[in-house]
Length: 262
Length: 327
Image 1 (spheres, rainbow over the protein chains, first blue to last red):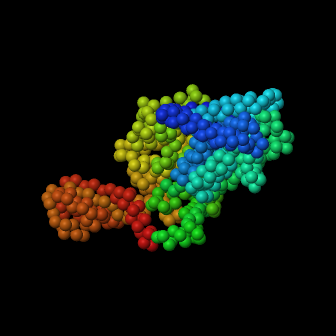
Image 2 (cartoon, each protein chain N blue to C red; image 1 turned 90 degrees about the vertical axis):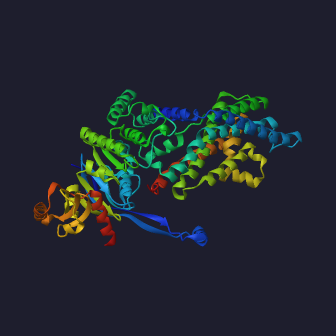
Image 3 (cartoon, rainbow over the protein chains, first blue to last red; image 1 turned 60 degrees about the horizontal axis):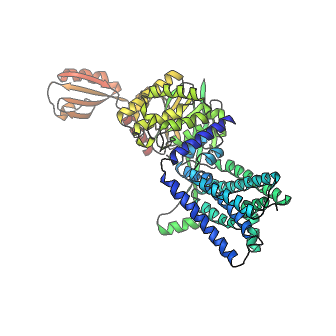
């Protein structure tokens, strides 16, 4: 465990060193986060200013969902995009060889090698929006509710990670799967709004097939004090199952790895 | 004691069989035709601990595929392989700490950062303490003649410096079995010589086993007593380099400096005329007629200097592959 923690420290400090070689990125990313957030708030406001609700959610409650989406999007930019987005390239160029030859779990290496600080503004903006909107919505979370919310947020991060990793792992067979990961990322945009705002068919799709509901709506329900045990359990189960699937698939996929020719 | 065993090793790849042109592309998109191509067939050998073995073959002969099976990167389709008592494809941590693979055409160093940053990552991954890692880096850097280069971004290093830094990164965990795939690829002659000297020194100091592929015969002649020759996926020869040259080249090269200039016809009956430039003549003479031919040369021409040597190994092996391709 100590070796893994030290490795993670070296991974991230070297990633930071690389990213800080290009400081202009920081400003661009900050502007893009603020722009995206403002755009989402405006779209949400359009619904509410005309008196429409979103699936029975008040304006402030819907902002909590948007905050969680922004938080997850920041997490995606910080860890998922730089790491999982690179897997396809590792397979295509054969640099996966070096990863497989290290005495460390290859899935851990591929998932945690890079750390991009430019997603952190998104994480902070998301957290700020959650706290602000939850307060305005009248939420007074107890310690238990807070712990539950953190657990559910971890579950949603895990589900998102596993789905992405599964898609990236298929590059062992199909090599170029950039399009698939792009489709995944754009579908997850649906998580900006509470899942009950969608028509029933989409709601089912977003709960059972693409678990968008577990990513944003379920944690938002928790912080607003409306979480029910079955949803919490379902979220936990979904997180464990998708993580298990990602590990199983990766181990299976490596049997088919042929390594790029020299 | 043998440290590498390969028995009946084989690997075939499933590759797409696509016809050229738009029609072929469309057909390929809708109904992909695949075929199995054997890359390595029934290869068996053992390598003793501490040996430095050259692995030779033309492009596509199966060298890299064999190395990838020995390092556990790909699973053999047939046969068995054992390295340092491990089955490579299981990629157990203890096995991965024992071996290293250096690939001349791929790099593990982080492009935008100095090699020292990559070395810190490797030290952490292999669980080498920081003071110990510093000690090993100093020792290897001295052997490799690397100094302030380790603090310069990798992208600013010359190819030779980068290769030396790659070697350092690959040897930080003190592996006892080294697989080197074209480690001197693209290097200039001086850099090649330095890498060779380092590898010989490393082998002497640590007793590590080395299996080396290279297109530069200089690497093989300088480092390897024994060579494995692979052709079209099959092992063609396994033995000493010296025996190979004797077996494959039943002639020797005789080079004479003469006291006068002679026309080419004058050398008829003295073997095969290889070159004639002014006073210097080079002849290829079969081994069984060597002494007779030399004494006739000495009595016929005013010989100032005479040298007998084996023809260059590149030529022998090139000839061997050409003959094998024809056969």
